[in-house]
Length: 466
Image (cartoon, rainbow, N blue to C red; front, side, top):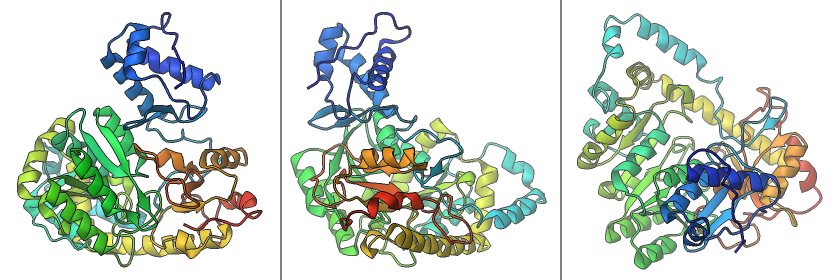
């Protein structure tokens, strides 16, 4: 454990924020190195003569800034030599940088469809009604459109089971506010969506990462965690997992659903990428409908600017989530929800989705060719690539080297859940891997992938296959 005492006597503002600021300064100044284990909450509270609650709040603030990572049963560790962005992700790069670190869909595919929808919306006689306060969960028509969209993932639900919200991130916030209380343990895949970790920290929840392999979450690990403790819920991305791109098989989905039911553990199924593959197993919620909150949105399949998502759950659970929606945004923007409804009803959303699929397949093929990746490391429907690295590269070192050459990629450490994973050569979860987004900055003529400079260090050594 590192012997670290922050200097906070001369800093203004709340003590928890002063500690986080001191931590950022010491990381930036090289006084705290990556991987350093910080003092326990109780030990630091004793040294600074503050309450344990103040230290806990300081560490949560530091984790929110991306400075440290907290691991159940192990402590808090310095994440990198330089503070990251507000959500534990890299800061926005300068315009000259080729940015392959953020998972963005291609935006050219939906412009015309959205423009036509906006014109039609402007001509409606009932437009004024959409400028008023409406029901928390959306109008009956909007909820029916959400049910229709969810059905494309093989999940049949009624409109009374659907909540229209402001995207998947909002849906996750609502779900955690409804189901979890401060101090509860939330299980995740060992590599998980980085912003979910930030959200959990803000709500004072404890994350416990579970082992994964090339096929996704291991059911036996989930069952062991349920037997060993009292987790409140499991958060997972079973289809095109972020960041590895794996798709959980139907057999594993059935086992995980059965385990959740047996131990009365709720599942948050994040299916934001679920409609991108041409073929996929049924949604996990289909096998445990009373124990699953299914979450999707239009951000990756239609347009992130709409900020419209859908939650599907049992009628009782959906009703329980409405106060969280009302307390956060009152309602999804009726204009955007109505536009999304029109695009779904008229088939325009399906047409845009089809174009995104074809474009994504083309860009994945580019990644395969330019990065010389094995097919086992790719999925034609994914917006991201899990990049196996050759020895002696580690994720953060490789990301730093790539950035010096003008290319931004995400190191695998950014996605690591609350528990260390078995390193293993080329295993998902190894620090010798990272994620890149081939959808960013590739030219429409598809003659090259803008991140081609990443291949330079890879050509010298054989890649580890996932």
